Image (cartoon, rainbow, N blue to C red):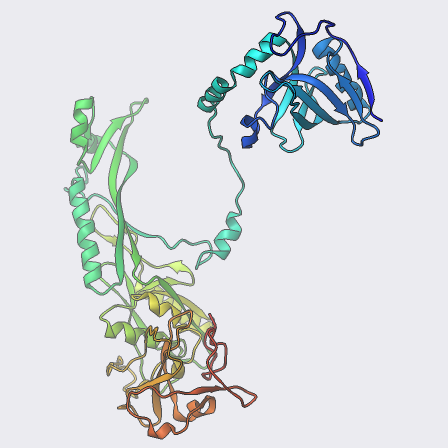
Length: 534
């Protein structure tokens, strides 16, 4: 049976309906609020609740009960908590009384925790953020506090503010795992400095002139075939030290009325505490992005490779691009990697195959100086770097700008050219390939027809173009393979007597020899190389 230990603090009795003003009781004092909504729903103890009973211990038979009134009030309760803590009995159940429900005793299961100056507090088991202590009050004061619960709730609502702080974040892992190029962003921008209006560079054109030059550069870049789209534009303040003619001719603000003169200034100045003239250059940063994103092409090299099979040039706006590819019977790195196919598709769409990175390093233009010169990469040094890769037989990882997001699923770098597109026709070694209009392309057909549709029978008799019509998770690929290879994987009654472009149903021949419809994930081995399963 629980042991009851009562200690009188005041022997007079009172009714909860008519409290005695001088009756001293032990009440609850909330020190830290809960992070849960129960704090104001009555489920947790509140400031002003009258303590009726304390039960200390963790099991039913060893519970020690202390009932009100408590001898010596708050000091007596603190002594009880001190003795219990020394005995390592830190589990406590507190029951309180309220005027609005005298026969209902709310309770709280808490843990005894030492505080400063040999004082003890209680920390709720269900919410460690909720901390309370004990206080000496008159019964009338307790009832008054209980009655003011609504107003205190409003005051607390006005007082509490969301708290902020610092939390750790796995930056290194995120930058390695989530970026297409580890530790390098996909954001691309061009910084335009205001143009100097005289040879001494003491005066600069205004902000409107810089914005106009940025606008002209963007339009010229797009007109040349570079597949980029405008994202944003902003002014950027750069500090520099000025003196002499530059300082005297610079717009400065001596009062609020002079601020209007700075609105369109390309350069303005001020004097710091040490009397040094500081100039603020108002540059313009233009943000842009490739229309179809960046696509990586890995060019694997062999010991007997004597040439890469492509050449690079630079536009007037500073972009490096593939200017030509060698199209012929030679097994060149550009052909093996699929770079030649990308170049041909780009040419068909009147776009340039822009190189954005070489070995994960950006090779894009990034600055226009105050003289109007564009800071960009040199094609000679870049060609030398690519040649060193060939001599060392080290793979070249190159990123290019795509003009169509659908092209990203083609996986040019992993598939052989015979699967990805038609075999290029033989031509002179130095001639750039031209298109006959039947190049491979990506199409989306959501007809849901599990069959193949045969196209382009004007091609050579030993080649067949096919289009996958099934609604796969990614865009189906329109690809070509030889009649002989097609027969090895597909079951068709009479391949030679198909009817033009009418769909011809086919089945997938598994290794076991059985027939099958195409699974939704397209996980079977259909082409000589495995297509992505999504």
